[in-house]
Image (cartoon, rainbow, N blue to C red):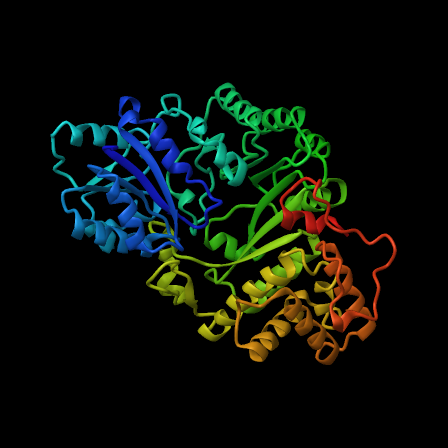
Length: 508
């Protein structure tokens, strides 16, 4: 039986806990006394407690995040009731700030704030030697990345076959965006490039094909990002897929030349636009060159096969509904395949709270701590934007309606206005934002586009059927039976690079 059990509740099974693997890799001699046991937030806390306690650990280390803090609080409560002698150590971004305000912190024995790669082993060693710790809140100093053991050997064969593999070439962010934890005073620190590439090579040789780089600004150090992309390109095989978070206004010729050489669908760039309102960007200390960003996105869409996932945030201080809508329209014109419409969250420890009084920012008190109302956007309109975001993910982002989606704003001129009208109508019509089957959503789109948006019936049906075929379906729904796909209509190829959702956007 292990003395130390490392655990967390992942958002989904397919997400392998990166932080746990770092902690495990850096336990030193204690590795032989430890194990990793992962769960997801859909499992009941009592069932999780049963599994953990069955291993009879002396220490349980739990990773706490915004998406699992509610469930983890219930878990810790049950563990301490059942086995008060087991030492519970918490870590993770959710418990690294404002610790005195959190129920889960009160329940646990110790909390390690900050990057605990090395500190966790130190704490466990002291506890297992019988030397109790007097302090509850333990601040971990920033670890020397040269001393941190890389965690990639801790990915199992099952992880490689079925889960997203997270990797990082650097930590930290030089920017100061006030809504983001990376805005705190943490310098950018790079992993030794040769060590990192050797580890990446080992994963590729073991059959890994999809990686998500968690670097906050992958293209910050151009020499490093160019070396990594060249490394991946040299070893590229069909089916490989690499996700990067990129600074959108930083794509010089040296990187442009490399990314053009990747096959379509092999790369995904997540680009944080967040707002097009320069006054709002100034309020939240966000710096970006909008002209250069737009030029980069136009280049990516016109000359590469990169899948672009762009982020836009609703509810920022100083931004009203019209300003957000104008930004959405500008982003649509730049052509990213996906737009994540995020609702502003008040992450613990972020300086966004300095705007609360002036802009009358009201946030939910429970995770994910989303904005409820501001001086410029009412609660009712933020509710509309929440539904807009959900329906946009179902329709605009899913890849299921590539041809149909633009019809929603054909007669309105504004993508935001057109889609918001559809969103309002859909909620009024169904009263729900989840649980809509694909064919049912197609029927609702057909009804709305013909009867409400005034689009020609034959055009709507043709677009819907083409989109249905694009998703790999060979049958024809009855309400589209009289229409046939045009010759040459592509469907999703199983051999295409990229994940399924991204492949749908390619089949146009």
